[in-house]
Length: 175
Ligand code: IMP
Image (cartoon, rainbow, N blue to C red; front, side, top):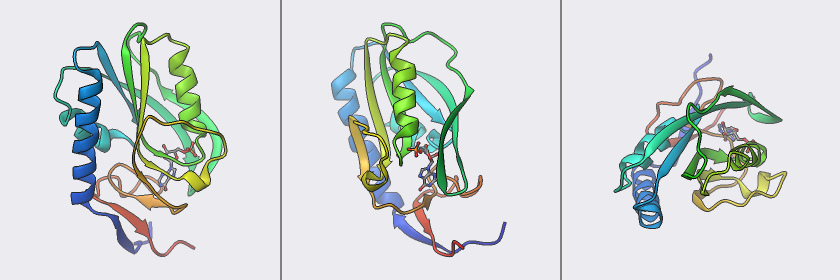
């Protein structure tokens, strides 16, 4: 892949502060409950691992693999690539997404999880692009609302690259 020019969009310090706040809020809400935090692969894995470590409570983790993206525009199709390994019936579930763009993936995930009868479902996304929503998508917690820009880093990729950046960046030289 050609080298892309990146500019900082949200700094590592700002992300870490926001993630700590979200973790504390979630702990206050769910402490003492039978919690399963679900990491949506692949994009959420960095956010997820920081978020659960900022939560002052015991919980279990699960991974749900979906793929919905080719290049920089959403196809609207959601393909399940990895299912949960345990039932979530009766559990207090936290669904952790990296970014809500059109809202199609989050809506799909919410419906898929609610059909498995959890006791409660709390949705968290690090980023949301309100201008890009194609379907109504209510979220319980959002880290940052951003304009309709394509961003990478902190788990988010462009063609599989840049997931390991510790901050969120915008790619400057898209064709
Ligand atoms: P949605 O279904 O359109 O809301 O798309 C959600 C998925 O698209 C996210 O989980 C990301 O994997 C991907 N995505 C959306 N916007 C971006 C972006 O700006 N950068 C990288 N991936 C994105």
